[in-house]
Length: 113
Image: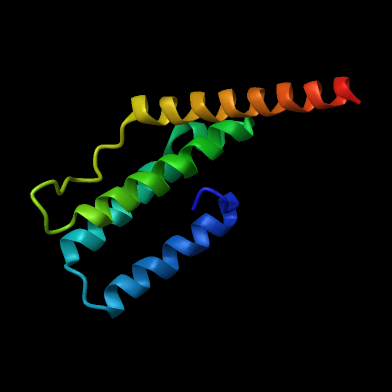
């Protein structure tokens, strides 16, 4: 999910919800996933010009949804709602840190040449 563009993510949501219905998922779970994605798509970072903010939303939703899917039917099952702004910020900070580390590595390689 985190490698998708925002447009691809939106199209994938529709397909996944259709597949969940086609495979007879419980309506409550389908509704939860749909509500989760509505919250992601309406988050204030979604409309920000900073690409790292949108990327953080994609990373957050992808990882949380995967964890949720893995935990369905187990004692560790949880609700996707409400979304956690704190976790979104944590993913954003990691994205920024990784980008900075990559830039430093590139600069070090250029300097060595």
